[in-house]
Length: 316
Image (tube, rainbow, N blue to C red; front, side, top):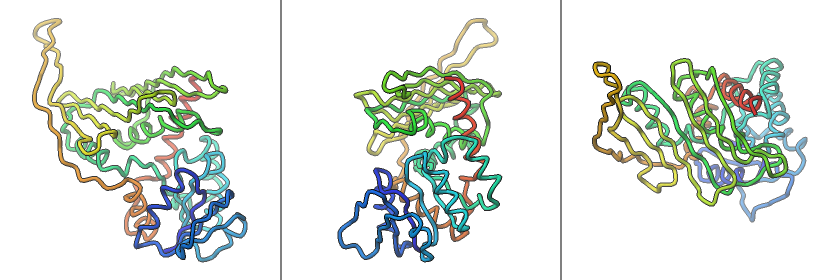
């Protein structure tokens, strides 16, 4: 299979590295306006001109890894050729563009989303843990994604970091949408939101707190998901013990007013084999193209995520 990689920046290079080691990929065609050619690699060809690139009939499918503001036009170019296309987050600049894609094309089912954490072994473990009711009734989700991040021209910290939590929540909650939300954000640097605190409330009573920042000397990528039976922690900064399960909780004693019962127990650290998420994502994308596997990353999933993202932006 031959892949057309659109964009060769920071994320594009990570994608390229994983494409290069895949035994399913014969050739990689790269569209890159910066002309960042690689040394003597017969598996790779570079293009500077988008028109020539998209006329290449040897390309079987595409991956878009360019600035978000360009996603819409490149997705259209791929769908016009009736080709499969994988898109990095966020899929488009806004929900309006996504709706227009659905209106103008009848093959949006060929879009695959690089929502990288959904291919992470720890997130997959959490999803299965939730489905088996091991946490009990879900109570809250608490996330922190902070670091000295790169400031982008066309997106803010919510688009860049909080979107990870939005698509994780959509996946774990089976597509439930929040009915209430609140946002606090700071944009002292060039009118760009660089620090945000988001609270989402759901009809079931479940709520989520999301903290994101591009201005922190401490790097944290951490999630807590609490149920009435157990609490699970995912710390992506840990090298191997990324998941901890706390057999702890608090219960309200209905027989005795104002009495809270505290439950303490063991902390489990499961051994979860880890494969790089992008490697898994590319393998799943290839299966999706070959129609050997249905994608859970459906267009409807993207629409729900973008809808919540847009509601957050309106609340700023």
